[in-house]
Structure formats: C-alpha cells, structure tokens
Image: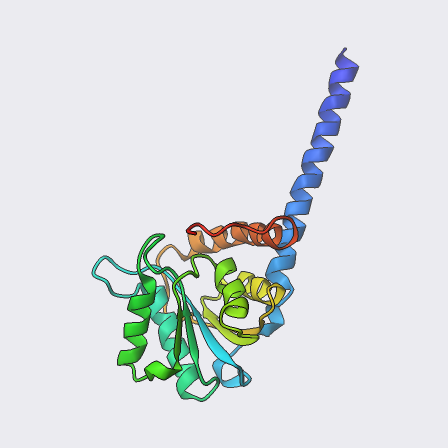
Length: 206
C-alpha cells in the first residue's frame, strides 16, 4: 500500500513540475519573443498609427501618473511625425471608469487636432485593444505606447492579432507599486498565451 502511495505521489510531483515548467515556458515566450521591437522614440519607424493603451484615472478625473506618461509619450511621437493619427484605446466607463474621455481631452489640450484622433472605448483589456485595432479600425501597423513592464505582452497580443507593431516605453517617472504591476503583468502574460492559443476570451462588457 505504501509503495502504491509513493508511486502516486511521485507521479503527481512529476505532473505538477511539468505544469509549472509549461507555465514558465509560455510566460517567458510571451515576455521575450518581441523584446527587440521595443525602441527609443528617436529610433521609432514611421507607422500607420500611434496606439496609446488606457490606464486608470484619478478620483479627480485626471489621468493617473502612468496614463499621463503614456499620453505625453504618444503626443511627442505624433508631433515628431511618427504617425498621422493616434488611437486612444481603453475603458469607456461601462466596465470601470471613463478613461477615453479623459485621454482625448488631454491630448486635445496638448494641441493634437481632433481629426487625428480615433477613440476605442471598448478596449477594456489589452486583448480587445489589439483585436479591435485591426478588425474595427483597420490598423495593420502601429506604435504601441505603454509602460515597459506592459510592452512585451502588448506586442505579443498585437502581433498575433494582426497588428505589426513596435513598442515605445512611457516610463517617464518612477511609479508607486511598480513591482506589483510587473508581477501582475508576468502572470497576465500566461493568460495572454492561453487567449491566443487555447480559447478566445469574451470581453468583460458586451
């Protein structure tokens, strides 16, 4: 009886180890496959659009520090002529908070003309942002603007969903809880692999 128990225990340990290794391998693949496509603003090639991914807003209705830096980075790329339009993609308020209105108002005040701005209020997650950029807005080539910890996952998803992309880091300042955000994004990277290879996710709001 003890020998049977030991055998079952041993097989369970092997299985668990294999699962952990698979998760680590898939996560590392997502994080590393497009790392060479993260570029400095000055080295960014011309593109069809600058795609600014949404982030949280403050209780006073202003962009969070991370979102402000994404917007400032995207504005800089637009004004330097890297792309003729900006796609703002995030929450329209039906899921958590209205990021899109805050983002649009910010870049309008910075001098970006309304004719150069597209908005996607159904970019509730990075998956939806990338999928809809291609299918809804017919964007096939983009400069993705977000923080460095988020870029590997965003690039992986956009490339797999039909948007040929490079990424520009919007890390203009140090951020509170950055270590937590980084760990969370590593965990989300395995979810991104599952979303692409196993089962297409449903948007949180339909």
